[in-house]
Amino acid sequence: MPNKHPISECIEAQLQRYLNDLNGNPPSDIYAMVLSVVEKPMLELVMRHTHQNQSLAAQYLGINRNTLHKKLVEHKLI
Image (cartoon, rainbow, N blue to C red):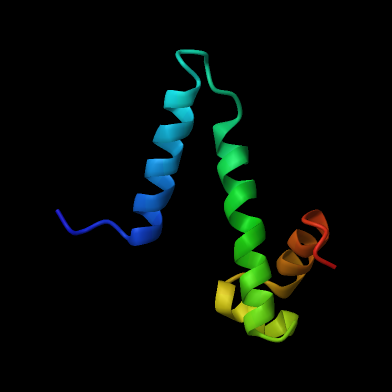
């Protein structure tokens, strides 16, 4: 089996810690939680790296510029 990506390993470890901290209580909305905590810092970093150039950032992310704009608004980054 190939090595896991370091980001994947980090997310897995933190998600396991989150589940352990619940002490048997059922988790809620894990999918949305993980996406929201990963997506915003990723967008912030890529926007800084591209000097706020949305077209270039969308290209780097592999998404449509309109989708990027919508996500920036959702996360209150613009």
